[in-house]
Amino acid sequence: MSKRSHTSELGCIACEELGELGAGKEGWLVHNPNLLCALDTHSLALANRSVIVIIGWSDSDTPRLKIRPDLSPIEPEFITAIEWLVFDEIRVIVIGTSCGYLLLYSLAGELIHKQFIHSGRVIKLRVRGTNRDLIQETSSEEVCVVMPGVIARIDGNEIQNKLQQWFQDKSSRFWDKKPRKQDSDDFGNSYGRLPYQLWNVSKYGTCNDAAICGIMPPPLIELESSQRYYCAVTVGVDAVISAFRLSEDKSRSLVGAILSKVVPATFSTIASFSKMIWRSEQTSPRKSDVKPQPFARASPLTSLNDFPRKGEKLTLSPSGTLAAVTDSLGRILLLDTQALVVVRLWKGYRDASCLFMEMLVNRDAATSSSSYYEPVKSDYCLCLAIHAPRKGIIEIWQMRTGPRLRTIHCAKGSKMLQPTYRFGSLIAPPYVPLEVFLLNGDSGQISVLNRTLG
Image (cartoon, rainbow, N blue to C red):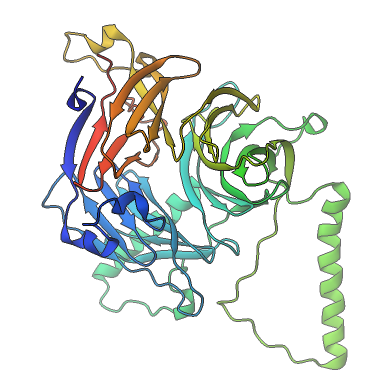
């Protein structure tokens, strides 16, 4: 079959603004390791080390935006991760930097929030939500910040509240002729810090990628615990795959909990008493001083060591129960994140990238003559799209052990993309299946992989 039967063209992103990102050179989209992409339903954000370009691909008249983040001139700070945050009518861009900062920008280029997470490079930003089911008693929406050996989790509700507050304040300032003055130290952080949880997952070596897969049961000795535990999977150099149980509690034991309360209070009392005796001078701390947040408990569960194989990239299914891992030997491992076992293996896919998608396999739904029929979730099956750039193809495999459903030829310089998770979509009908888009960097054409078979 021809390529057109497997993909549908949606638009073109070619424009002059992309010249600053290297557009015009063959393979500019895939050969530059510093070029980052993030896709929304009708917009594409691209970034290099110091500039962000936002383009609407569905409407050629949509204004294009260029943002130059305020990065540190002292340290060689640059953009290392980018993603969309979408809450109903609120759409913003979030970036991670090489110095461990998160920056949120409006689509007008205004800095909404800036916050230090942890020292180190932000490798990836993951935005996802999980539904309530038999294993997870509550739904969860979050932003996961991945750094070398470190994972941070920010609750989606915290981000939504901050964004709503900022946009409401912006609306009120529009009518206020005398806007309030803002301290330069507080710029981008005038509404307080975003609370987050931080874990050290470097027991098996520095990770190249990581993800929080979902909520998991507590350990047997803590069955009555009211804490929430998460399962995290990392891939890296020393361990191809490793898994951790993440606890919300920062203390490691009852003794540790007591000491964490008693020792700081005792030290504070002694310090205050010594200042009264020696009359030591105390300088007021600057607002810009950043205090590192302590790590919560991360308990190792298992690891897969297979030298010289190295884990490279990790892709999660929508429910978080499956993860596709690419390694340095051209293999793709399908991991069951609940049983923590590899359930499938593909070989001969060097430099591959993977994305989960959903295909319409219910033929009655696909061929229904009724124009009012809307396919439901049960009409779709979960699949894995594997882009093998050395072969110039995209293969779609049915999960978990199903056959290869389709092979799609694609041009060199193409890249698979997927729209970011939309907060609140867990309860919003109708059901929107998971789709995969294909961006041809050389031509600028963006297409969607057809989700119906035939």
